[in-house]
Length: 272
Ligand SMILES: Nc1ncnc2c1ncn2[C@@H]1O[C@H](COP(=O)(O)OP(=O)(O)OP(=O)(O)O)[C@@H](O)[C@H]1O
Image (cartoon, rainbow, N blue to C red; front, top):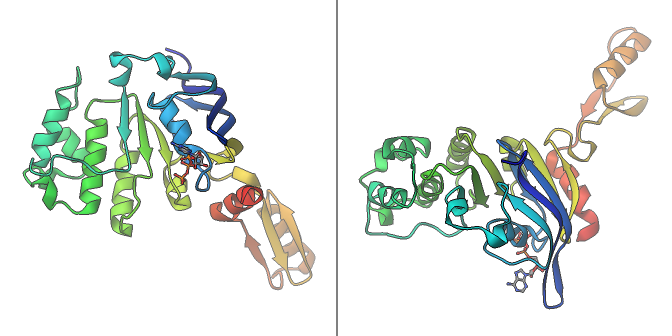
C-alpha cells in the first residue's frame, strides 16, 4: 500500500484540438474526503474518468490505490466504488433485490441491512425501484457504490436535483462512510459540508487547493469600523486593540470573512 490513495503528476488529456487536462497534479490521502470544484469544461470529469480507469490519458503518472488505472485488473476494480450521474437501472426489482444482486460481485460485501441503514433506505427495502423518488434513487446509487466496501469512492455530482432536506440527509450518509471519497460538485455548500480538502480546477489545471476554511486566503477577515478597515488573520486581536483605543464600543464595527463561493469565484475568475 502506498501512502496516498491517489497520486497524479503531470496528467494530460486532449480531445482533438481541445486540451481538457493540462498538467494536473493531485494527491489524496487515505481516508480523506476531497472535493473537486471547477467551472463547466474545467476537466473534472476527464480527470475522474482517467482515475476510474474508464478513459485513457495522453501523459502523466497516475496511481490509484497503488495501481495505474490504465493497467488495472478485476481485483483493483473491486476496491473502487463509482456513483455516476445516471440513476440505478433494474426498475422492476426491489431495493433489497438489486443491492443483494450487486453484492454478489464482491468478495466481502457489506450486509444488506447495514447498506440500507447507511443510505437511509431501510424503510424502502421492499419497494420497487421505479417507485422511488429521485432522491431515494440517488441514495440507492450510493448504496450500490458502497456495498462492496470500496477503499475509494467516486461521487459525481451526487446531489444534483435534491431538495434541501434530501441533500442534508445525503451529506450525513457520506460523513458516515469510512472510506476515501473523491467528490465532484458544483455546490460550494456541499464541498464545505463534506470535504476535508478542496481542489479547484480551471482550464485543466489546479488553481488552488486547501481546506474549505482556508482556501484562497479565506481565513483572512476584514475588520471594518467607522474610521477605517483592516485585513487580518486575527480579527479578535484587532477588535481588542480598537476597543482599547475607543475606550469600549467600536463605532460601526463589523468583521467580514469571504464565503467559499466568494473565493471560488475569485479563483476561477481568470478562466471564464
Ligand atoms: N469525449 C469528448 N470528446 C471531445 N471533447 C471532450 C470530450 N469530453 C470532454 N471534452 C472536452 O474537454 C473539456 C473538459 O471537459 P470535462 O467534461 O472533463 O469538464 P468538466 O469539468 O467535467 O465539466 P462539467 O462541469 O461541465 O461536467 C471540455 O472542453 C469538453 O468539451
